[in-house]
Image (cartoon, rainbow, N blue to C red; front, side, top):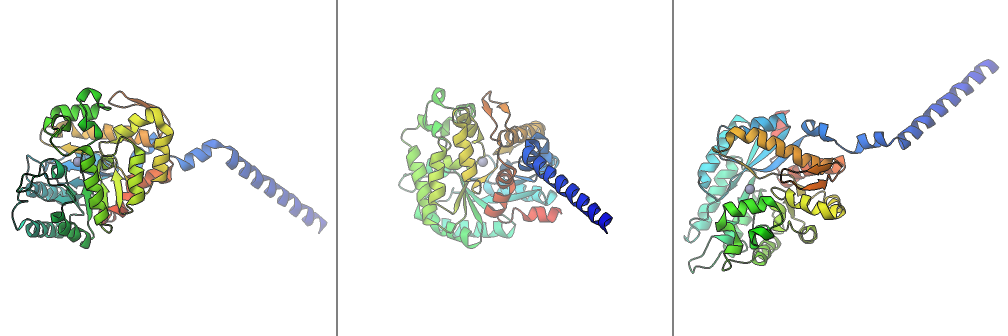
Length: 376
Ligand SMILES: [Zn+2]
């Protein structure tokens, strides 16, 4: 009896000591904590991700096979630009979706070419109805509204124009997400040499028609942002992704103000992550805090365009870009991007990374996630 009793005590003591050592180890080993809370560069291909902002202008894509390897699902967005018309872009999108039903969803757009026709609104709604029947999960409106489109009197048409209201109501009624690209980065209103990031310098050198510094007679930067804000305010139940950091890339405090004011709006970081990297050089903590505070409102995207001229190199280009962005968001390494900018990675916790790369896309753009269900 005594023998048995002392053995029990010894067993108990060993158990307690082992348990408390394990506890101690768990508490004190920062490596264990690190592995639990953060991804690293090696996790890139295994984590489920969406690039919610790409444009496929070719049927024989090399981007999608690369996306499969890198565990990216894609939102292929049509837009009211050339040289391919909006309905022809949709034909390409449907072909690609048919070939890769688990990998690619698409967002429709509509052409504003016939804006001044009396039946513009009804025809646009009919086109969108058809697009939704074919599986569109979003509708994109582009910067041509605000920068190109004019009414019968030659006045610029802005995105808060009442003529768009019934179109937006129709999108809302169908539980579809509006992807709004209004305005441009603030750099667009500056001379090239004053712009902050090379990606903007290169874009506006190549597209002088959209370089607003050269067109002072066009609506101002503030006009663009204000019109977009009024549109968002007018449609509080419409889900809106304001792409390109809502054209407020120059200060995350400005983005924060809108996210606080408009619960129906989120933003994507497509083609503006460079601005976050630029700001991280001097205000790392501010950018980090913004990403933590608004972790439910940020979507990942690149805005990469695959077309005949670049399809050969696209797989490598997009892979390098995806990895570069992953390193910035996930690691705490000292990094240099393809633009030559030096900054430290944001080292966002796993939970936040999963939201930015997947969960926010699934919540903000319903339908995009069905592709994943189908893939299982
Ligand atoms: Zn785009």
